[in-house]
Each structure stands twice: as structure tokens, then as C-alpha cells.
Amino acid sequence: MTIKIFTSEQEAARAVGECVNSFVRANPRAVLGLATGSTPLPLYAEMAKACAAGVDYSGVTTFNLDEYLGVPPDSEHSYRYFMEKNLFSQININPANTFVPDGTATDPERACAEYEQRIRDAGGIDIQILGIGGNGHIGFNEPPSAFDSRTRIVNLTAQTIQDNSRFFSSPEEVPRQAISMGVATILDAKRIILISYGRAKAEALRGAIEGSPDPMNPASALQGHPQVNFYLDEASASALTKQHKTN
Ligand code: PGA
Image 1 (cartoon, rainbow, N blue to C red):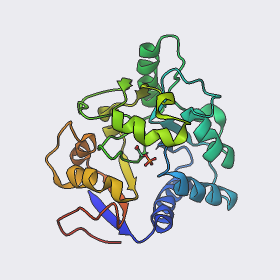
Image 2 (cartoon, rainbow, N blue to C red; image 1 turned 90 degrees about the vertical axis):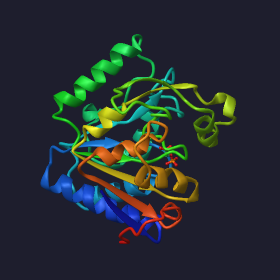
Image 3 (cartoon, rainbow, N blue to C red; image 1 turned 60 degrees about the vertical axis):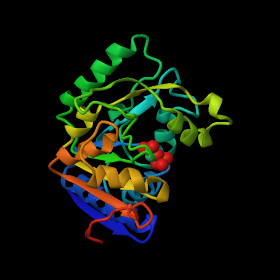
Image 4 (cartoon, protein in one colour; image 1 turned 120 degrees about the vertical axis):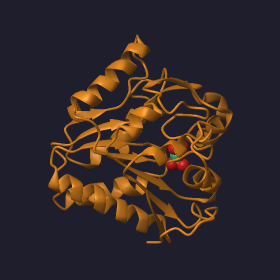
């Protein structure tokens, strides 16, 4: 595990962007795991900038962590819509190679199993980008989430509904369920990069990095992964008690 601490979101995003873009340059058929939320937006801007400067995304495949259950892909609240707007339309990726769980599948459980199979068929995820919830969730793996969980239908916690209500006109409008990659699905990625900004994530990060692995803090499962890198701003790193390497 490595922990890098940056003085600004932009600096952290530039550093992660350099990792991702240099991986894509060296591996034109890279498989990337992607996240939604506010955290990855500066990274996606870096990827768009790199693509405009010549990094070729046309052979890259992506898998997103999650999608709201029952929300159609063309709804402005869907994570598919978020990804189209903030990344896929900004890079030269082949739309057929972008995968987001289907929140409107007629048989969602089967769709979950198929999503797992698609990831395997693609050869697995090379780099998984993660944010973290204030409750320690990764993807929509809410506490408690079993470390051997796979892509499945999950119930969102009251805190997550509250946190995500900023994207809706009221908390009542936030879907109560989602499809999410499981903790074990995430741990299968060859490399994991978790990005976090802001004080609201600090306690969850302390548990994830310094606590004992505990399903009540799903991000603590990352301690069992051989190649995980945390990219934090100072506010997110502020509750860490041990000496960690700064950038
Ligand atoms: P945020 O969400 O990036 O919008 O803070 C992260 C998460 O909940 O995983």
C-alpha cells in the first residue's frame, strides 16, 4: 500500500492522470475500472486533456463500479449519463467498449452475473479507480459488505442517500437501490487507485488504512490487496495518526 498526500485536488488528479495515461500509452488495450461522483472529475479532465494531446483511448475498455437500480441510461441521474458527459464524450474511446451496469435490466440478478463474466472475458481490470464514501463504502458496497461479495443489488444507506441528494432535487428522489461491483470484484483488479478529497472522508480513511479489516468499513478490505495506492488531499489525510509518506 502506498499513500500520497497532495496540497490540492488538481495536483492529486495530475498525478493519477499521469499513472493512467502512461499505462494507456504502454498498453493500448488497457482495461480500466471507473467511478462516478465528484472525486474523479478532475482526473477525467486530465484524461481528456491527454487524449487531446495524443493519448489513444480507442482500444481501451472500461467498467464502471455501479449504477442506480431502475434508472434508465438516458436519465440525467444515471451513472451512464454521468460517464458519457464527463468522460466518454471527451476521449476517443469506442462506445462499445464502455460498460456500466444496466439499472433497467429485466433480470437484474442475471445482469449482475453477466457483468462479472464480461470483466473476466476482458481479461480483468488493470487499474481500478475508486472514491470512498464518508461511511467507507467503495462502489456502492455499503457497510456491512462481505469481502467476498460480487456484483449484486445493494440497498443504499441513509447517509449515502443524503450525500448523493445534492445531485437530485430532494433526498426522496434518490434511488434506494443500486447494482454494484462487489468488494471481491474490486479486489480482483490488478492495481487499485483510491482518490479522496475533503475532511468528510478522513475518519473513513483512517479506518480503511489503519484499522483492522472490517466489513463495517468496506474500504478496509483494500489492505488485503497487493497493489493499492491512495491519493489524498491533506484534509482527507488529516485523521491518519501514523507517519505516512507525503508526495
Ligand atoms: P464523491 O463520492 O466522489 O461524490 O465524494 C465518492 C463515493 O461515494 O464513493
